[in-house]
Image (cartoon, rainbow, N blue to C red; front, top):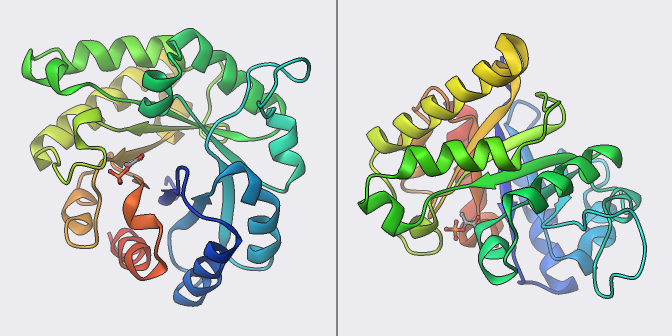
Length: 249
Ligand code: PEP
């Protein structure tokens, strides 16, 4: 049984005042709910961990450097993230693949760095709108999976987020059939590479314009184990119904 995971990515949004959303969110949750994770901007990580201490909300970062330390001005290592009390880190988000020209090889190294620091890596993959139109989605996904996910991935150290780039922040989402096709494909590839036990244990999240009104349908897909949510994770009043829909699925 894979534990469901609702992960919120605040991106570059929020200062200390936004931490009140964590307190409000914790008030909506009960012990039977899906695992809940918030990934705030790096300067808020420590305070977010303090604010959520004793609640069921876990905290994660949005990126880490692939090296453990050194002359990398402005970067943050995985061990620094772990030191704040955070337990997850997103790697390979499409906004970083695009704006920071991160390659599959970079992302693989970042995932390994995350593991070495004791963090669970959420590895993001997803096709562009052009890839989808050209019917290249599964080829792109296969390439990103083999390139970005290191050998040694397990259900404990890795989560995969399938995020079609054209669905992120656009209000557009794939059809349920398209979501099922890609998640089933990812599951089959993970089993083929990592074996039955770990291939079935790695959780798969769908990401891209998940909202309170479309979440329940997305969560009917067998291999969708949760969601990576951007805009709708910023407000507890939007994220809580998504978590509840996941918990009920
Ligand atoms: C994301 O940034 O990972 C994301 C899925 O954003 P949104 O939910 O806003 O589409």
